[in-house]
Structure formats: C-alpha cells, structure tokens
Image (tube, rainbow, N blue to C red; front, side, top):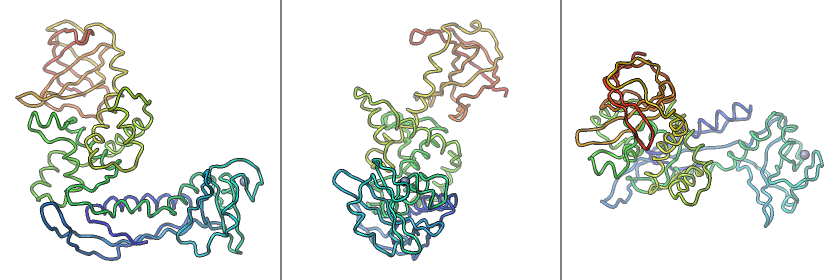
Length: 393
Ligand SMILES: [Zn+2]
C-alpha cells in the first residue's frame, strides 16, 4: 500500500511503523514491510503563494498474521445491520460468501453459542475456512493472548486508517489533524521547563504560548533557521522519558474524566483525549491537558494539609520537604515560580524567580533550608511563606 507523506510527517509515520514491528515481534508474527520508495518535490498552493514541498512515497505491506499453518483472514464485526468484514489486504483468496450471513453466535471450533461483538475468519494452508470466537483464536494461532492477536490483526487490516491521516497535506502552517500523543509529549516538555503559557497569558506578557512552541518544534521544525534550532536546544533541551510518560498519563486521566456537563472545559479535553488525532483548531486545548492533569493530580494532596503554620516568622529552618505543587505567573519583572511543599504535613510555599524544580520533581522529597518569611492565610487556609531557600539534596 503506497502513501505519499509530507516530509514534516515522516517522523510520526516511522514511529507507527516501529510500534507495529515491535508488536509483531512479541507475537512471533511476520513483521510489516516498510520502505521509502522515492522522494518527490511538489508545488502546493498556500494562502501566501506557492511552495515546493518534499514528499516521501512510502510502501507499507502488512502480511496477515500466520501461525501454525493458519492465516488470519478477516475480522467480522457483527453490526445490527449485518456483518462487516475487515479483510486482510494481503490475503489472496476471497472470503466465502457463506460468512456474510453467519451469526456471531457461531464458533466453528468450540461450538459455544453466545453473542459476540466480533468473530474471526481463519484460512488453513489446506484451504479450510473457519469462523471462530476470540478466545478460540489461540488454539489456531498458538499465542496466549487472543486479544493481542486480534488487535494486531486489526491494525494490519487497517493500515490505511493508520497511515492515511499522515499523508494529508493541508498547508504548511498546520496539518489539519495532529497526532495527540506527540503533541502532548512536546507540551509536557515545555511545561516541565517553563510552566504552561496560555494564549491569554502570552498576549498579556509578550511570551510565546506553549501551543505555538509545540508547533514550532514539530511541524515547523524544518523551517527554523539553524540559530533558532540552537536556541530551542539550549533553552529547552531534549524530550525525556518522563515527558512521554506525563503525556500518556494525561491522556489516560482525561479519557476517564467523569462526564460533568457543567464544566465545558473538562468535557472538551475528555473528548480530545478519546481520539488519536486532534484538529489543529483544538491544539491549544489539547496542550493544556498537561497542566490540567498536573493540577488535578496534585490537588488532593494539597488540600490534605493540617491547618497550621510551620515554625515561626523570622526563624531559620532546615527540613525534609515534599514538593506537592508548582505553578508560575507573570509579573512585569518576569516570571514568578511558586513551589508548594509538605513539611510536617503543613503547607510551605516558596516564591522565587528561578525555576528551581520541574514537573518531574513533584512528589519527591528534598532537604531544604532557609528562613520563614511570613505566616499567612490563603483561601482560608494557613500557609507558611519561606525565603532564601537552598536545596541541599
Ligand atoms: Zn470458540
């Protein structure tokens, strides 16, 4: 199956291919074949004129999982209106018409009558066709996890759905659909370094919104000058495993949010989390999922403090402090970072101009020393402000 992928999207395609290869390896199934057939340059129309874009023509072939002499031929999705077939594109034979009206209650292997959402069609080397239920798959394909076999087979049969969105060229500025997990990984990266910057905040304080930074390093990367690339590298460094983890966790968290129709924001990010691609016009919303996740997951602990002050005003202190929450806000003199700690179950807050911790540090305990600046009441709760803080370990 050939696809024409704009250069800017090749990176994402390669990651998909790697994922599929790994899955095949785990199942001991034949891997998908991937090759770059050729590079071509094409002129495309942009709002501000014509541009020449580099495309890669790629070829992806997914051989049907074939094990123990049986080939996975198709998934039958039993819909109210009838059977829908997801046939393996590399299958040379065609599925016998008998299966068109075959009920989901049929399993040619165990003959257990029960209603199934999907059933599977298998073909033997001798030319025998069978319809089986999910749990019987392993008796043919010889792997302990029928779910994984079915999932892999399903993906192989839907290569078109997987790769076609990347082959769209919708203008240089933004592809129309952006892969959510990649976008959120970048967002987690920037949030870790400098906190989340919304469009409103960016406009007010002349900063760059997180969503724009995400676009710059992903889809616009090839347009940046070498100086700009160096600047990014110096200021933000590389994506870490923790960023990837934060993105994954944020998506899982948002997917399972309770449906609360009184909160449009949560409803929206929940909807976004449940799709693999996000439309460009929802990019800002998608990027904000990271900070919403971080806030939501630090809130409970934040509210569990004793309503007491720590130490006394003006005193020096040295203590084990667990970082609970961080945020930042802009002033006309720059960014103020706010770090909240749990010290002896009391809330201790340090406001500073330096980014002394990052998101990965939330939940970790540090030995810090400094001076008690002030006891104050914030949102009807007692908290202790500290200053001249040094992180010892
Ligand atoms: Zn069965």
